[in-house]
Length: 110
Length: 81
Image 1 (cartoon, chains in turn blue, green):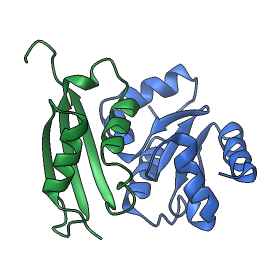
Image 2 (cartoon, one colour):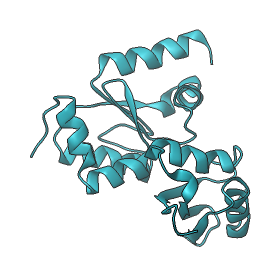
Image 3 (cartoon, chains in turn green, orange):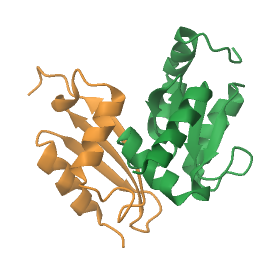
């Protein structure tokens, strides 16, 4: 991965408390898995930045290397990699996601 | 290029020999699968690490030949061997 892409990923993660690397945008997701995670964040009414990896081929490949994770979407909260669609769905359903947000002092719809 | 169900199971079991693997072809197109993997090798690992172990077992096919694989991992109680 080139330095520019690495810096871009870092700045997105550092400047956005909740950052979702996804296919498409939160309002127009281009993939069901990205949509599922965006919807969970919308339901919880948390503010998040959706980064559309389809707009940038080096970002699309770079984020996989950066996180050591082969699929999109990828969710970061306070610079910590939380997981992909399966994990986010699972921790949303079992209440762990709320615990993570509580621990990081991020407000959401109770 | 699609992958067949047996191929996925074989790759996972090569890396996680004790695993119970249950795979479903979600769309019947050889491209969208879900896998439930139960292994004692997951114990003490975070969910992210567990999923990475499954991805690694697929040797780079995930996101390439294999378009979509929903993963569920569970720890197997070490005492029931």
